[in-house]
Structure formats: C-alpha cells, structure tokens
Image (cartoon, rainbow, N blue to C red; front, side, top):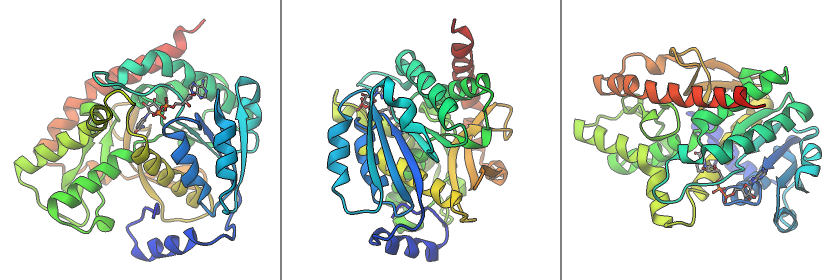
Amino acid sequence: ALRHSVKPKAQKQNRRSWNNLQPQASYKVAVLGAAGGIGQPLALLIKMSPLVSALHLYDIANVKGVAADLSHCNTPSQVLDFTGASELANSLKGVNVVVIPAGVARKPGMTRDDLFNINANIVKTLVEAVAENCPDAFIHIISNPINSTVPIAAEVLKQKGVYDPKKLFGVSTLDVVRANTFVAQKKNLKLIDVDVPVVGGHAGITILPLLSKTKPSASFTDEEVQELTVRIQNAGTEVVEAKAGAGSATLSMAYAAARFVESSLRALDGDSDVYECCYIQSELTELPFFASRVKIGRKGVEAVISSDLQGLTEYEEKALEALKPELKASIEKGISFVHKQP
Ligand code: NAI
C-alpha cells in the first residue's frame, strides 16, 4: 500500500480502499512527462487511487496511447491526454496536484547535475504554465537535479507572483523508500514498520539518512552506518549502472512518487496525520531549501519536524556539515539560472 503512516490502523484502511471502485473524493492530478519511464507507471498507480476523479496526462509525444491504454482500467478516474505545448494550458486547468517527471534521465557515468542544462529549461517552462493555469495546486518536482530544479520552480513562481512555498515540493520520497528497504533487510525488521527520515537534498552526499532516528528504534555498528548511508546515497547510481544506458530508476521512483501523491491527496482531503520527507523551502538550517520530514495538510506544508535534527550522532552531524556547501551551490545554481534568462 502507498499509505505512509506510523499508524497501522490507517494502513489497513488504505488496503481496503485499493479494491474499492467507488470514488472517495474527486481530485484532479496532472502528470507532465507522462509518457516517460517514470510517467507511465506513475500514471498507472495514480489511476488506482480512489481519491482521483481525473488524471491529466501531458507529454510532448506518445501520450495518446498511454492514456487510451490506462483508460480501460475500471477504476473511478477519467483519463485525458494532452500533447505538445499547445495543449499544456488545458492539461493544467482545475488541477489540484501537478507532478513533473519531464526531462532527461541519467546514463552511466553521469551525475544528476549533468542533467541541469536540459531539465532546468523544461522545469522552467512547465512551472510557468502551472503558475498561469493552476497557481493553487500542489507542485511535485521529480525532474533532476531537484536540488536545483526546485529553487528554479520557486523563482519562476515568484516572478509570476504566485509562489506559495508550502505547496512546492521536491520529491525525495525515493530516498526514504530505499532507506526503509535497505534498513529492514540489514536489521531483519518487518518492512512495513520501518521508517527512516532522510534529510538534506537529493544527490550524492546531500542525501543524508538519519539512521539514529529509525523507527522502530534499531542500533547500528559504525560499519553498518557507513555501509547503509553510502548504499542509500548511491542507490540511484546502482540502478543507472544495472540498466547500462537504458535510463535511471523508473519503477521504484513511480512507486515513491505515487506514495507522495496519495499522501498529498489525503492531506487535501482533510486527513490530519500525513507526514512525508520532502525537499522544500526551509528554515531548519541556514540553507534556503532543505529536505526533512514535514506534516502536510490542506494548505500544503503545515509543520516542519525539527526534532529530527536534534540529538544527531557525531557521524550524522559531520555528514550534515559536509553536505551543506554542495547543496548550497546547487540551490544558487538554480536561482541564478532563472535570473540570467533574457
Ligand atoms: P524518460 O526520458 O523516460 O521520460 C521523460 C519524459 O519527459 C519523456 O516522455 C519526454 O517526452 C518527456 N519530456 C521531455 N521534455 C518535455 C517537456 N518539455 N514537457 C513535457 N514532457 C517532456 O525519463 P524518466 O526516467 O522518466 O526520468 C524523468 C526525470 O526524473 C529525469 O530528470 C530523472 O533524472 C528524474 N528522476 C528523479 C528521481 C527522484 O528521486 N526525484 C528518481 C529518478 C529519476
């Protein structure tokens, strides 16, 4: 189940709802880049949500077939397709949540920052359209490097006069999903119970799993901390190398993004128990953007869980200080990209 909660009761409810063909709410979700490696499985998972009444699929090509295919699933939401720039505005009208996995993905040997030049422009263009057509929507940025593309989105929204920092999210859920999986395997814990907060950013050493805050509490040797931290940080590269040129994580990413969409929809629907890690504008550290656990409500981020950064181990403290210069540079790169535009 995609339901993320520390409360098992709520998880059971969600399991029931997945087999329920009755709509339980009527939110509209748009996926921009819907024909891609992430976009397709993500659209499928969103199509299964009883909280969604309409699923808008936008891409520059190949989206008609994806939409026709998905529309045959007998779940409540209606699937609509939108192709090319001329249909972008219509894909966004009336939408509550916009998810952006548009852009190019890594190939072996590439860092997320190598994607900057292409994806920065794509995110800028798409967020301009969001600002014009559904300025009130939650915006989920998946296109990498999110350490920079989220600040880009923020600047674009500011220029358009519609920036609400509580509704702009960099999707770092996959880091949590991976951390939970790897920790459960290593410590022989029941997977469904494990929750590891991951803070910082979403690239290399900026990804900082706070293993000391693992729930249920678990103890790790220094070697285990080192090994798990590095594996979580490099997990994306593990997939890029295994796919050997055919792209980066798509299926686990779609799963993680669908969980974040479902959490956002539950929050919009009034659930007062929604917590996720995500990369947002933040005052938790001296950096203007930072990933941490937050409580999400009807109006977006309701509270930042600052206690996660208290009582860190020496290892975590050092790693936190070490990631700051890189994350800061990525944020500044994103901001100056927008201001350099003619
Ligand atoms: P992909 O290449 O399979 O799909 C990208 C899709 O975006 C394609 O269908 C393409 O037509 C579309 N696209 C390109 N330009 C567009 C535009 N201007 N407007 C709308 N759509 C456009 O790539 P994949 O594997 O789906 O990855 C997408 C992005 O997600 C990449 O930037 C990748 O780095 C990122 N990613 C992020 C992760 C995260 O944890 N946040 C994890 C994995 C990937």
